[in-house]
Length: 167
Image 1 (tube, rainbow, N blue to C red):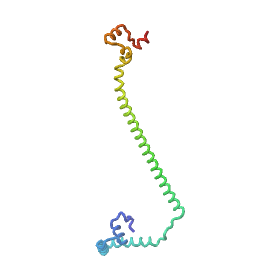
Image 2: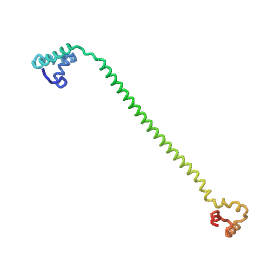
Image 3: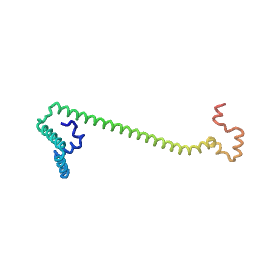
Image 4: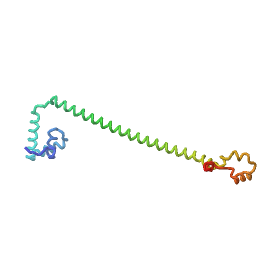
């Protein structure tokens, strides 16, 4: 008997397909012609037929309870691992989306604050520019002419608060 496994020998594959009835009519004719011409090919077919017959004579094996239980346990463990992996992937996906959402919220808040600050800052700049006038508005109200105010300034009648602190 040849020790070469059938899957490594293309002739054995052809003979196995012939025995199983898996060949087309034209291929069957080719195999039968080769069987009539080649004694080694015929011998190999006989060896394979004997192996087939021996396999048919073997009693069917039944799986015992421990094999069934261990197989079911393996399937259950594999399913549990798959569920855990998908759960972990879902958690990491949620975590990433949460971080992206928080980053977007932070960016939107920063942009909103900068826009509001620049808008408010523009209107307040004019107030800072006019602060000297605003501080002395009461004195200016009673002045009829600018020359009068200039005289008061020369007499240092308009004392700044900073100057008051120094005294």
